[in-house]
Image (cartoon, helix red, strand yellow):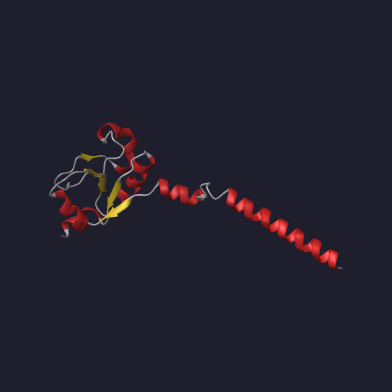
Length: 139
């Protein structure tokens, strides 16, 4: 009977040691889930209208209007490209994929789609004007 308990205890110890070794073996491996990886690929930041207004005083970013049909532009806008045609107008976008791009439309819905598309195109510093030009004009 003692022998059975001893054997059972040894087996449990051996099994738990193997399990711990497996956990340690994968600790250096990126364990990001596919959903988290996709979220990272399509992430952009929102910027508030007041922050944009302040930053326009010493503009150091690319300002992009994506609303269709074309609308009144915020002063300092660098380009107008329809939100659903970005890929056709890559020559009008910054060559440097790390350039900060602030995207806006009328209310923010088209610019969200455009911001996601820009990230998928490889741009790494994309910001969406929350509330669009409506929020900006309300200041």
